[in-house]
Length: 170
Image (cartoon, rainbow, N blue to C red; front, side):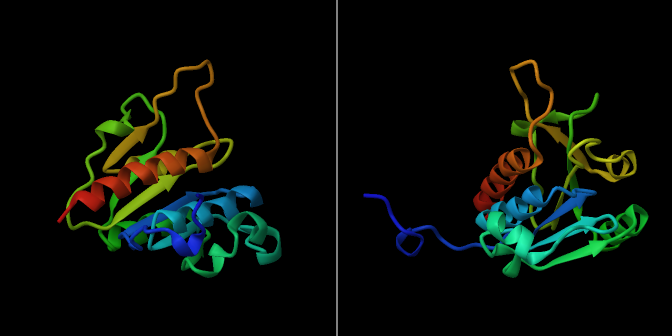
């Protein structure tokens, strides 16, 4: 028998994970990022960019009202976001395929550190300035001809790996 939301036995958790969205603008992705972030117990979301379309009625359908549950903020300039992440001493993980990135299975989530997971724009990916401050750059190994996947799908895989590792930390 399928369980309802109220009947699941999942332990509610909040992990010290901040999702940092580098100039993500597609409303379906924005709503879905709230939904997947809530599902994996993230702490908050930071959106980098100007005119991020967080119109509740337009993202409500894909977010399923989780945009009301996850604290979020908009930082217009990338340099300002970099300063914030460094000042708050996040361990920064960028999700991007680069010449130096490691497979997500090799990700090492440090104990007792706040994590900032940086995800990139739907077209350009993670900007060079954000990659430059990352403590780790990780990618998802793919086996087809395509070298990218939807930002929400990739974020789901990364949050699964990070939250599993954090869940193992006593």
